[in-house]
Length: 372
Image (cartoon, rainbow, N blue to C red; front, top):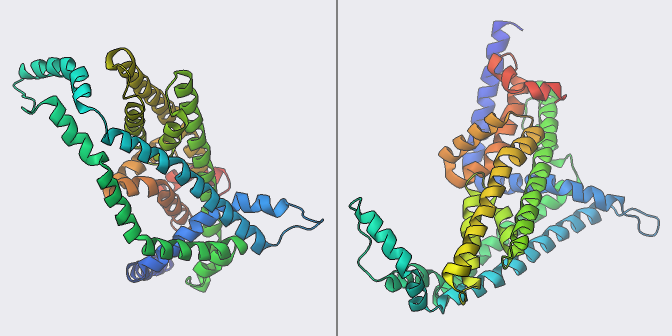
């Protein structure tokens, strides 16, 4: 390939990127619907394939029926999660709203005073308010039933937008499930003819790797939830299943998620055991919950995530770690969640169109070895 051809190729790629950026900026809502529907369809493809294997009266259900059944399955799972979490969380919040703060303050007074004396050696003073008042101000405001009502009211106020968003994504997902090539043809229509074949290969590899990634994510979260549930159950912690499921859901957020999950587990444990002695029973139980999350986080960070993610997206564990940090720097928690899928797409595009660069060959070497 000559220098002129190289430059023309870069110019076309640059112009395409500008056009894509313009479309994303001006039609971000519509594009977000399409991208979200495509991701949901990728996650639903294995379920869709299972429904396609079903035989009813010696006949297989058609693509439209299987797509509809897949969406129904998603709604049932989502509804089950809501039915599991919301009543339990509201119950625990109500428990904390009616708690006897004086009794808790009395139980915690001795360790609180010891911490205060220790901090004074470093010229750090604790607030002058009583421990009982501090507990009321820090907890009761969060878990007051009136606050819960305001929170629910705010959700109800936004319900219209939620319905529109869900309906739009569901509608588009139905057709993406029913016609697997629909999204590909939609993207190809925006690509110049001379890059059509390369673009089809790029989309094919992207779909394959993202499908592997989401499959690996489901496996990772399932193993994390089962591990938490087993250890918490063995140690006699109440609401072990609720804590484990919430911890697994929060684990979607790399590195930070388990901390949020542990905080939720401690909150549920406290609100479920307000009538037991702090020193002899509640304190040791909180330590158990904390240690279980620490053990699972060590297992997840050092074994599950590096092994599953590196195999699913064919990237080095160090790459994944750095990419997640970059995602966090760009857009916080959302950036951390989207970091690996976005990086996967960028690597596939770079491998197809920029493979003459040494750094691209280095980063995409495992993809080449695996035939992507």
